[in-house]
Image 1 (cartoon, rainbow, N blue to C red):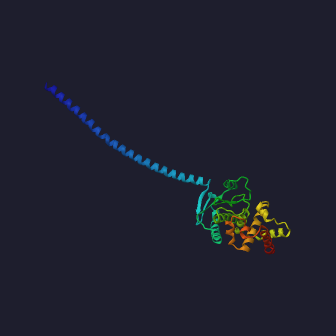
Image 2: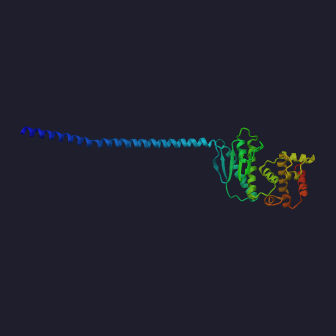
Image 3: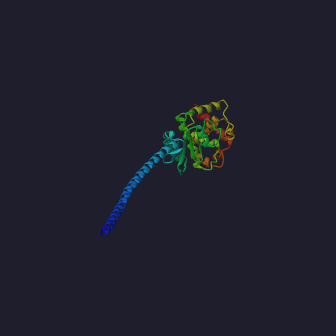
Length: 297
């Protein structure tokens, strides 16, 4: 009996020891889990760092993508006192050719003709003829067109376009020519002035009217081949005559009546001769006399 009781007690002690071993092992598992959790946290930090690196790579990728996109579209390149310049990246050097030139001439024209500047003028420089034509919105644009003014914006063909028909010097004159059109609009937004006068004013103020053209006009007058002013109103003269004769008339007006008459003509609802106070016939006769007396050299 005593031996049986002893065996029972030993069995109970053995079960108790195994239970303690299970409990101790159970208490150890959380430590491993914590370690695993640390590893998870570390893995999360690594993942976070990896994510940050990926974000950084994405930003670099986005930046690179932006650069790629900018090569294919017009982007803001520079803002000056009175102008905002847009171009493709490959043409941004063009802005250096005209920014100071446009600022100088805008100030000159504004003071000369009492034009009030109120906002920046947008200048778009297009990389090729097709994009310039598309921006103009008129098909079959003549190949000699390298710029235009529309809706208060100045649009130019890049002087680095491989098929452009003019050099840098003439490109700058075209830029000023189109600027004069914008100044004309600033003087009077309704632009009541006849088309030929607007073009003549731009040619005259941009420096495109030169002694060679004066000599040509004088020769045509001497040979009785000079087109009449009526031809300018009716648009029946060719492009070269249209521009140079119009500039000559503006030069005659300024010479005889002074610069102050120009904004009055631009703002007038009538023709230049009516604003001056003479008939069309007198206007024609005075212009031809001016050519005879001034261009004979």
